[in-house]
Amino acid sequence: MTAAEPMVLRLEVKAFDGASRWAEWGTFSVADSETQYKLTVGDYSANSTLGDPLTFSRNISGMAFSTLDRDNDKLSLDCVEYYSSGGGWWYASCSDIKPTAPLTSSGRLNTLMTMWWTTSYPQWTSLKEVKFMFRPKERSEFCML
Image (cartoon, rainbow, N blue to C red; front, top):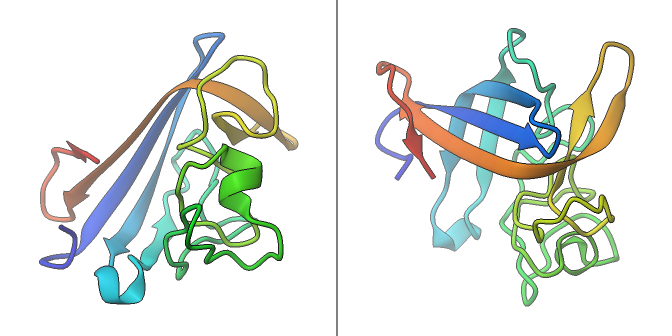
């Protein structure tokens, strides 16, 4: 899906209060099953309004995909089970976004949330919508994942 040509990744999120933000990375690829779908993501766009939940504090670039039966994160605890109630994701020392966790506005640790950068500090924010889209660098239209 991403091996044929260089890709750009765009993430769009919407909070329960209606606030929307986005982020883009100029480098994006997912490798094949032999590498357990290793993620490569980088070149964060400074114009983004979300902040960088993929590579800033808990860099997930270079990580293999984790599931309940295949824990590939860097911690002794299982991030898939503990932080997303079983939803698979590329976890390093867990993650600043949990896009496969259950949807709820409660803001519990194991629910759909992301780190939301404000003017001075990041804070966890419950999300009601998450869109991951990608496109070849040479094109302008995004495709949803």
